[in-house]
Length: 328
Ligand SMILES: NC(=O)c1ccc[n+]([C@@H]2O[C@H](COP(=O)([O-])OP(=O)(O)OC[C@H]3O[C@@H](n4cnc5c(N)ncnc54)[C@H](OP(=O)(O)O)[C@@H]3O)[C@@H](O)[C@H]2O)c1
Image (cartoon, rainbow, N blue to C red):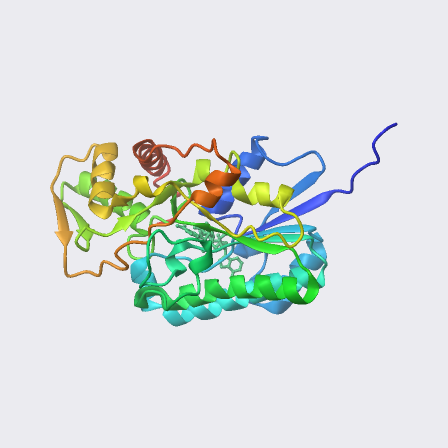
């Protein structure tokens, strides 16, 4: 007997033009994700401003998604966060409330949002895990972004408690890769350093790292982490109703590197021969955010992350090849 035709799934990716959205888009375009009964729709802010409830509703009305991967956010590095804590708080609270509530109103079957390890308590024990998000205040540098992101977790819980909605989240560490924001002032540490190394090499000047270089980070490569065996895609396909699948997505604790080691890796990848300086008058941010990936390993025991030096080299090569059009 022929199988009854399954209804089409319409998977809407908010923030589809950003670093993570582009990585998922590449995978879907290359046929490595998605299924025959799925239509994927990638949004940018040009499709509508998600801080605005009316525009968010108009998008859902027009596109009728059955599933949502919610990535859209005001995102930035340490120094942009320090300057604009209020904007990070307001923009992200509005975007998240609009997307989650509109998804509820339109009967969306699943929403997978993106939290971050940046939002965890500053004073904590290590490794951090999914249960510890709300256990104390975040680091002062990015409290606006952190509290706004934490509220996604609260809202997911409340939509499930009150209406049984299947809304969940993944928690990546620092992501980097093609299509990142390479702006030196506003971007994250790795793309900012890649841009600085590019300019230092071109101009024959030293490469200056902001801070002592001592803080430690777990970096993950967008093209692998959000592609094959992608957590977002797996969650969209497999999460059972109400299942508590909020989970960290990152390399193991043993693969954490210092900012100095990351900078040295960029120096190698860019073949930069000049001097490396550390401007210790600049803030270091949180010293470390070491996160456990035990839950990821439990679900995906064979998952392989790209080795850090290889991922840095590929990102540097992409930036050099796309310098004129890269976000910077
Ligand atoms: N990058 C990281 O290291 C990292 C780590 C952990 C978690 N995350 C989370 O992962 C998600 C994606 O981050 P990302 O690095 O891909 O960010 P990104 O490259 O800065 O992209 C942000 C995306 O959000 C869209 N957007 C921003 N404001 C919007 C608005 N008001 N209305 C509609 N769309 C809006 C942008 O659209 P335009 O392109 O049109 O501006 C873009 O598509 C975010 O939720 C972030 O918090 C990122």
